[in-house]
Image 1 (cartoon, helix red, strand yellow):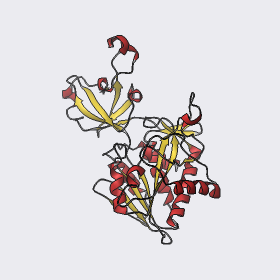
Image 2 (cartoon, rainbow, N blue to C red; image 1 turned 135 degrees about the horizontal axis):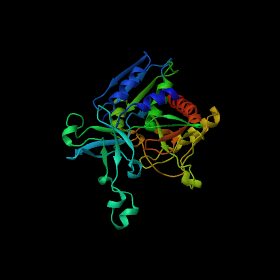
Image 3 (tube, rainbow, N blue to C red; image 1 turned 180 degrees about the horizontal axis):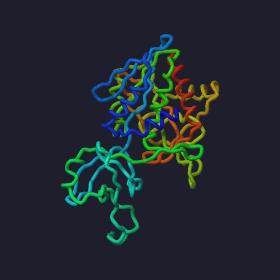
Image 4 (cartoon, one colour; image 1 turned 120 degrees about the vertical axis):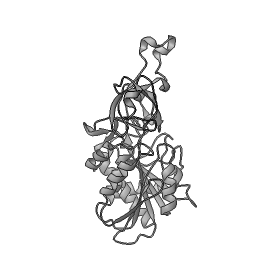
Length: 338
């Protein structure tokens, strides 16, 4: 699965521009899977199992990543931009990026300290003051290379980091890799997979996907913020790398079913996989719209603990990859036959 995560995370696909990610996932689907791409761009996959399941279970992972989008080009050839998804300004300063379909390499420039007045000298610059420098001398030089509406993605090399793995867009290409691994061989029971779009800008694709697939239960396979770093104590860590799949009882978009949360804990003990929960109510994911679709869908989330989420340097623990796969499979089997 690490190879799949590496390959998928290297593909550029901000919200609304997920086409290349979708094509890469389709190329990895086994022949026994039937798929469609809906009007939103969600990839909906019907997986025929060895036996018919009692309940229809949907597993969802989103294809999009956070990034930037071009808004304006100045006369002197600097590119202005705005965020696509939640990206902190501090993460952007001095970062290397790729702009547009031609992949122009640029750096995000910042107003020099000697041009800041008073207290501004000691503050992070406002996002509106940032720009992308691709080495052009004028707007005329860029007219055939860059235009407003072009996507901007982080230019970040993936690599091993001790026991961990670092890469861009692990939110949520790591989840997509888990779904692909679950169906690399024909499963014991029928499943529906939803590789969704535009999660990072408001959970927009998942509602359409859930409406189309009409599941009895849903499992969202995601990443979530881990703050197990220096200076964080107790509940402020939220969750920790290397301690297994993260199954929350609540986040900012969903209050999860206590019965499903409890059963997930029991399955961890019965099946022997590592599971933890979030110690703060924070974040949100596609469960926030899936559980409200149609007449309501009982939903559970299974997440990778991930440091430095929504940055060019997302970090997950390699031991958690297997734990995530085992957790997703065990919960899916339980719900399919509930």
